[in-house]
Amino acid sequence: MGPNLYEHRSKPLVLVVDDTEVNLRLMEGYLTASNYEVMLASNGALALQLVRDHLPQLILLDVRMPEMDGYAVCRKLKESDDTKDIPVIFITAESQADAEELAFAAGGADFIPKPVSRAVTLARVKTHIALYAQRRSLEGMFRNVIEFAPDAFVLTDEDGCIVQMNACAERLFGYQRHELQGIALQSLVPELLADGQFNTECRRKDGSLFPAEVSANLLETNHGRLNMAVNRDVSIRKRAESDLSESRQQLRELAAQSEASREAERKHIAREVHDELGQILTALRIDLSVLKIQLSNGNPTLEVKLQDMKDLVDQGIHAVRNVAVSLRPAALDMGLVPAIEWLCDHHAKHAGARFEFQTGDENIAIDDIRSVIVFRIVQESLTNIARYANASLVKVTVEQRQDDVCLLVQDDGKGFDVNEIARKKTFGLLGMQERAIALGGTLNIKSEVGLGTQIRVRIPIEATSGKCES
Ligand SMILES: Nc1ncnc2c1ncn2[C@@H]1O[C@H](COP(=O)(O)OP(=O)(O)OP(=O)(O)O)[C@@H](O)[C@H]1O
Ligand SMILES: [Mg+2]
Image (cartoon, rainbow, N blue to C red; front, side, top):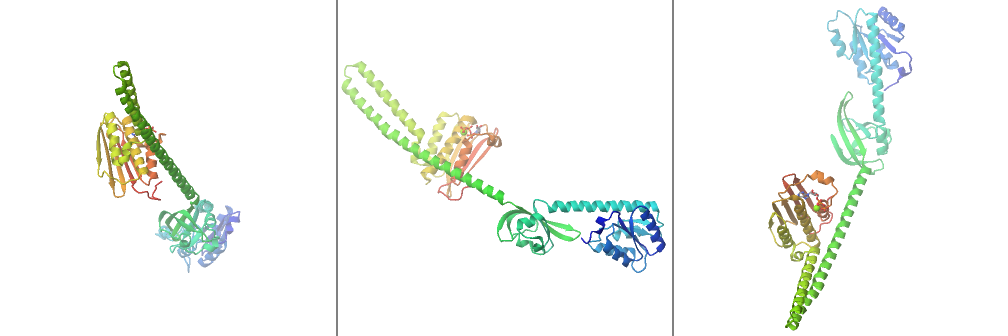
């Protein structure tokens, strides 16, 4: 915008343009009496000069003038950014039938038919000056909002060259406003898209890059087609996200490690209990049998006592076996698939449900740590089924697909609302999921009230680094 002369004026300035002296004086009288400041021009060229120099708030423009008529003057005013918004009211002669239409087509704000009435003139002038002032104040307010907005606004022309930006854009990109004028936006946003919202990297003046969320919008304005790019620095959010996912990954690895060492410990204790204690008890049992043969002759009391002792030792052997199995199912030593089959049999004996076990390949070459984890997932799923599902049919499928172990545990029981359970603080399902993710796999739970539950697991057979999902 050019000089803002009128901002400091106490009275609004009105320019009256007419080639007839009498009309000029008449208007001047009306307006000065109503407290307006008035400029007079007797032809179009003079009018244009006065408008440029003094920027009036309103122009009263006679249509019929020699050389340059009112429409031509108005069209000229509309060509310049500085003057195009100043309201123009045409003074039209009654004889001109299409005067109104022509007045609006030339960009006029209104028209007053001749002969002019004082009241009508003053009312129209007052209204349009008030409208113009209000519009300017709104535009100023809007400019301020953009200027001090917390996001970086960059306006480019159709060729992608920067025409305007706000204070935040200067700070964000490290440039001063004048340095950016005319530069291609692409030098700040290398992977710029024409339209839409996208995440990308932006470049500062010093060449450093930062992650940003950019929203590019094509605008049809009365300055032509422009593009508004709104840029938001998201480095803090990105850093927080990556810290969080890193710490979740660390937590997972820690949990996996402590689980692995717990399983190793269990395996060790199970061996000790089974081998050491088991052998001692077996030896004791053999000794008791020998003793019974040697000492029992004709001593029924002793015979009964020895039999009781043998029974006690048998109970001990049984208990040792149970402890060892619950610490680590011996079936796992035969491989993952037989171990899961054993688990299904074990549950089938104690549950009311029918079990169907299916497998493609008996020999899945999976290491001990992974196979224990898959086993524990099945164990947890079957425990949940026994506790909550009230199912009549349970299907367990385990098979190898390419490099993954795929597991499906399915029941036709009462099911549950997955979203609701996610809010509960229970660790069974969550632990299963975490175990699968820690091994670079996935675990999906599908359940619906009344329709049963499906737990689908996929775990890579070989350890895959960096494949973990968060
Ligand atoms: N197969 C299933 N059928 C019906 N409901 C189930 C089934 N599995 C889980 N649920 C529901 O989901 C809930 C959460 O299960 P989850 O194993 O996470 O926890 P929990 O068994 O209650 O406790 P935890 O396993 O920690 O001892 C259960 O309380 C139960 O309501
Ligand atoms: Mg559970």
